[in-house]
Image (cartoon, rainbow, N blue to C red; front, side):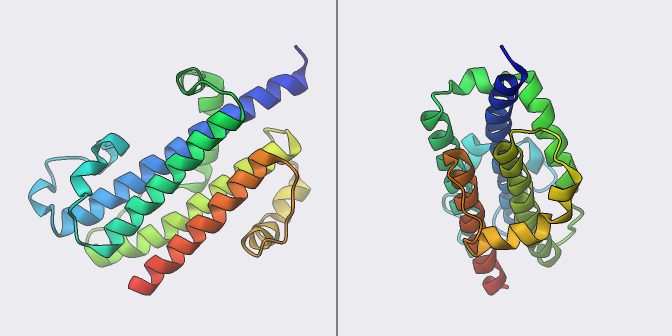
Length: 201
């Protein structure tokens, strides 16, 4: 099997892992915000980063619009994961067990995502807004890896990174690649959610 094909397979797996990490971060901040208000009894007893999408039903009755907005974002990303798996004929369990894809996705994730330090509701809201933009940049980076079929992006791509990112938000960066299109669409959707969160503040 040639190297190009190997990159292809690895990067399709990277997408799944990156989106899974995205779900995890959105879940974490949903609970961090809920712990400051309606689930304050659980604060200090449950670690927000130990909670996954299967636990999100605990937030179904939370009235905080910021938490509900995050839940909507979680569902959108989960939908994109499923679409990605279907259009590429991928088995979810095989992909998630792929250590190589997981490592590359983890490298991407840790480059863009910082550990939060929010100590109250107001600071957590600001961190959540930052999180949305960091996640969008993470997904955009992964989309460019797919677009170039290259795990290590060349310097000239990174130099124009933010200009190209803004073009995605304005729908001015066309591509014929169905996987890249899917990620671009998710970026636009998450940007809309970030804007909605900003309006809540």
